[in-house]
Length: 173
Length: 365
Image 1 (cartoon, rainbow over the protein chains, first blue to last red):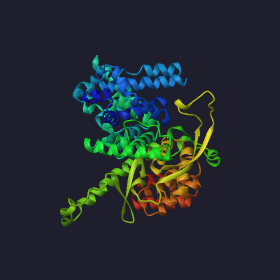
Image 2 (image 1 turned 180 degrees about the horizontal axis):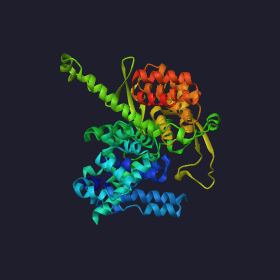
Image 3 (image 1 turned 90 degrees about the vertical axis):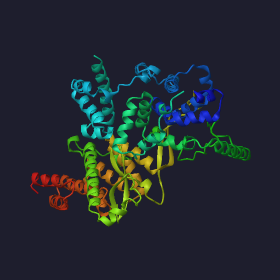
Image 4 (image 1 turned 45 degrees about the vertical axis):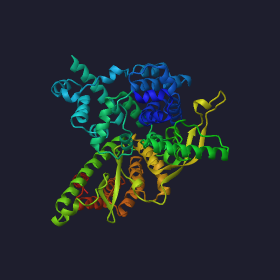
């Protein structure tokens, strides 16, 4: 909280410390949406230059969650401004999980649920089951899973993400 | 206020994108990202735009350094502020856009301003006219990764076995030796270790760790015309802008390998040939050009490139080059030479020995 208080007072060292901690996340997220290094750099600079004002105006419970939402919203506004955002893309972007403070706290804790996991994992589709097994149980990297399954890295990420979501649903039943 | 652990350890990201992590460390970061939407999206953004993390890190290296002691920071800041003011007054130049908090922003040179994400790949007409062979006949990229992963494991095992056989008197002194480089996998050239790294899962010689006469790749970069949002106006038009630029070798290679990973062999070959114009004995360019030529049905060229690798005194790609050279000879119907090549693979007893025996029997060579 001390750092945020200092940022509110426009302390340059405190802003510098936040930049050091979070700029990579802001930059990567901006790259994901804007797909252009110059635009993403502009976005990064804009966000951190205006940070003291924005922090001043908001009650922030969780800075990281707040910064995530702020960056996403700014990227969406930039895309709208450039008229590149179709309805479908917007729907997809806006439907992404809300990274609220509650969501941040909510972790699946796979390791502590191994017994339930084993039975639930059997109910998944074969490719999701394989991807999750290689990734979580055998602790392999995306590259390795990709090579073992003969599919692209993006396909591996997708299988793991979907498999994890399905697994969570099955564990909650 | 975020807890200390709530922000990403930048060094982990740097090591991930520099391919300096072990497989397990990579897995750990990827698993962490699955529990952290911000980190996951950020990594997706960097993954989808090859070279973008490296570019970001270089642009902000000074600002990203861990904080020094408060007094030292103030002192340095004051000195640099003074220097900047004097410089600006002297040169009467408009200052670069930057963050107010960072008086240590360095001038960005031509290399730093290159945006890999905006590049348009213009392929030479000679390569563009090539036609890929049917997919079932191609050397599959996943097989290349698989083979290299297994070769790495065998190499590590061989190294461990050799370590066990070290005489006791030397063993006793091992602890006093400097630790091996993490990314050295035991490949040698004239008795020297050759560092390797993995880019999109593909083994490459890590030339960042090897002294060469220069460190950049010069090439013609094409970009669609356009301005940053804050500079754009209604009269802006879209056109292809050509620019002669230089990029650090590893950044250039990373994007080149991203094309290879996507099985865009023409773009990958186009870029590897540019590397070879400037680094004629570059092992990465020789090997992956050889594979690209093979999949584009240009077997004479692939044989030439694989043969060149074998003449260079290094172990990094030798086994693979020998094996794929034999396969190229088979594709050309040069049976006698193919038989000799396969027999050499078999006699050396390396990684491809069983494949070579099976292929020789199948083709009745």
